[in-house]
Each structure stands twice: as structure tokens, then as C-alpha cells.
Image 1: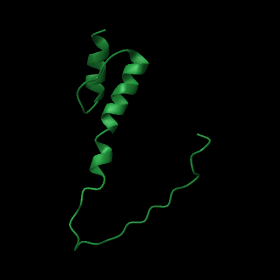
Image 2: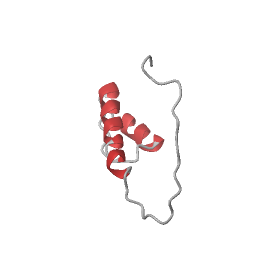
Image 3: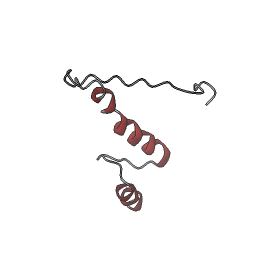
Image 4: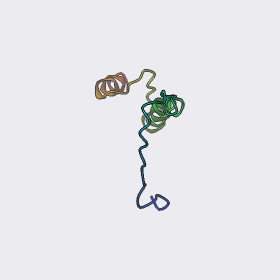
Length: 64
């Protein structure tokens, strides 16, 4: 990818006194749907259940 950065700096901040707020969960929820849609676009086979395991992918492809 031409626009990807060469490196990404990650900074971990340790604050055990602060309760987790779930900042990552809202963005993670859409990833399986996006991957399933890309799979459908590439294969014409719809995946409707996460996680998209190799077994489920093989089973879905075998039905076509």
C-alpha cells in the first residue's frame, strides 16, 4: 500500500486505578460484517455468523 506509514508508534499507558471504558469495542463490532461483505463480494457466498472460522467458510463454500 503506497499510503501506509512505514512504522506506527504505540504508547501503552498504565493506569490500573482507572476503570476500563470500552473504547475499542464500538469500532471492533463492524469488522466481522465488513469481512463477511468482502467475502460475499469475492465469492458470491454470504456468511451470516461470526466468527468466520475456516470450518464455517469451507461449509459455506461447499453449499454452492
